[in-house]
Length: 92
Image 1: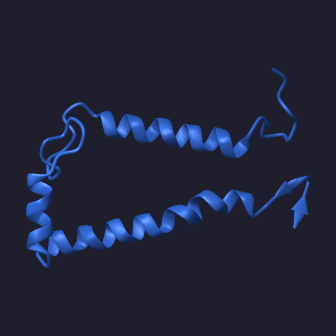
Image 2: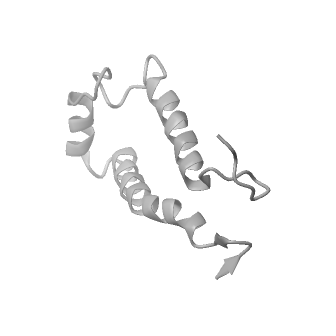
């Protein structure tokens, strides 16, 4: 369906692609919190990612929230493209 030269399905592509990752993360997090998977909990304590040495501790420099915000902004910019909210193409 096209309405005002906008494909309505394009709006939902990115969120629909993120659902399986969110689902997997939420299920594993629930297992750790409820104590159903102590092996996974220990792996999180022993593992590291970039500058975070213990994955059960919060990010000390707030780098991951800032990175997430920047990626969200980039995702919105790519999804919207070079169109303004009124539908006009921006000039560059």
